Image (cartoon, rainbow, N blue to C red; front, side, top):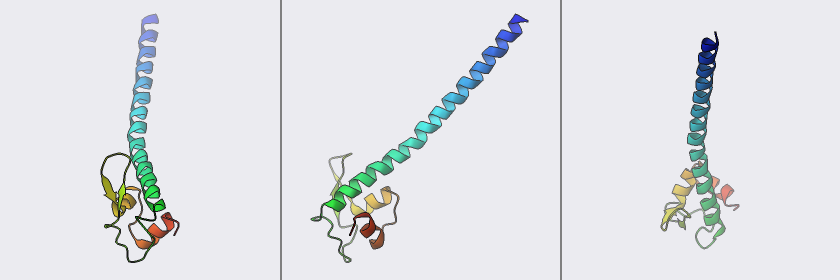
Length: 100
């Protein structure tokens, strides 16, 4: 009887460990997307604060405004930052995001 009880306990512990491992993997996988959105949102806010780059004008093309990004040495367009942050790339959403 002790052998059956020991095997049953071991199987239950293995199943619980597998469930915890799968939940942890799913949590890490989902958080990567959220971190990316936060990075894009932060870069977008920094670009909006620099009025020499974006002056809240209606005739400014979003694809022509370039902004420095913290994750690389290069630049991204304002349009790409808006899309990466999860917003629609139109003038009204930009004005709301940039406090125009």
